[in-house]
Image (cartoon, rainbow, N blue to C red; front, side):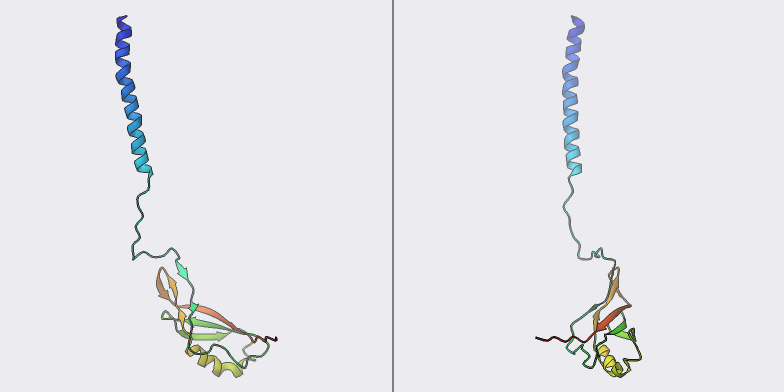
Length: 137
């Protein structure tokens, strides 16, 4: 009898301690599992590490009026400020010799949003394609 009474006397505090430990562990686990509030910083760098140059709108025309039926493809080398530094005609260079003055004038006034690497402007190249389109209607 005495053994049963001492066992019961031991079970009540042990059960209460086990229940308290499980509850406290559950609360701590719930607090640690919840994410904290997100706060963005204005100095964050976007996750896009590299971007290419993008042609910006210009007040000057970017069309070449004397293009024949074939297209004219130009590779422009863009500096970190977005200006065309140099160019190379990729399509038939012999047939497009008469367009060189127009191409030079057009590329002088063409501006790009410069390419970036890790958020900083860098030199890059862009391919421009011009073709004659006739719309009949």
